Image 1 (cartoon, helix red, strand yellow):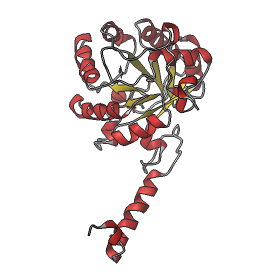
Image 2 (tube, rainbow, N blue to C red; image 1 turned 180 degrees about the vertical axis):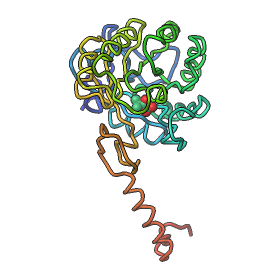
Image 3 (tube, rainbow, N blue to C red; image 1 turned 90 degrees about the horizontal axis):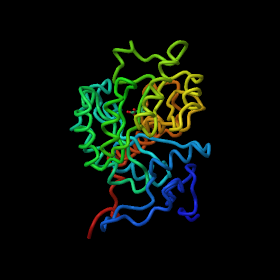
Image 4 (cartoon, rainbow, N blue to C red; image 1 turned 90 degrees about the vertical axis):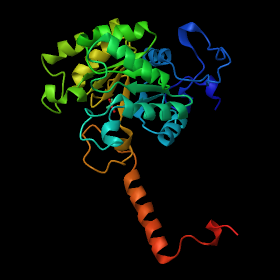
Amino acid sequence: MNMSEQNTPSAAGAHTTNNGAAGTETSAPYGSTAPRRRTRIHHLREYKRRGEAWAMLTSYDTYTARIFDQAGIPVLLVGDSAANNVYGYESSLPITVDELLPLVRAVAGAAEHSLVVADLPFGSYQASPEQALHTAVRFMKAGAHAVKLEGGRRYADHVEALVAAGIPVMGHLGFTPQSEHGLGGYRVQGRGDQAENLLADARTLQEVGAFAVVLEMVSSDAAKRVTGELEIPTVGIGAGPECDAQVLVWTDMAGLNTGQTPRFVKRYAEVGNELARAASEFASEVRDGQFPTSEHGFD
Ligand code: KIV
């Protein structure tokens, strides 16, 4: 299939040359070698307008970025979930900008088509719009195409400052892991009276220029309401089927994380088991003298 003719988020052709309202995207200016068929934020709005759901996955390294990019995942998130998945911390709170930056560089360097979103870690943006801008600029210089931050109305000025500087911002509402202790643990958000607050936060993020909003562990009813009211896409994780897009942490989705996964995770593969099998087969072949053979050596 000719990728440039296809304009759907559901396959490899998610990456298109169509520049929406601005017309067809032309070659990159100033002698840049940047690929032209990058998913742009206007594509995501277009998918919403057309009612086409799309997928986002986390990625923290070159190999997964390349594989997911080739698989047609339009948006890759270098999430602060790297805290658990790369660094082995118990929560996302300890990860620092300096720890996340090299992962963003790796993913952005490998993704030819996907839009790469960098998560702003806890403590790197909350203090002021200036701090948020300073941190976001570091991620953009590392190759990110957008940043994500957690929180609603109280970070309106922060989001506005980034958008004014030309940095696309993805919001994150509902259960926000960086506020785990303030929220009293892993609790579903948006039920009952909380729905109005959630909606007000989402509307504000849209008003100040966010291009999408993650809804994490939000009741399906509330997520449906927010999705219906916003022009920008909602990206659900444990927020029901009515969101415009869905995101999963790749290690959960692919079964690399063999520990307990939340109820909203679906495992599409058992990569952890397969790796364990490969590692023990390698070890046993070395032990038994079956590896290496002459075909793996040099004359
Ligand atoms: O860091 C992360 O992986 C995230 C997703 C759960 C949305 O924020």
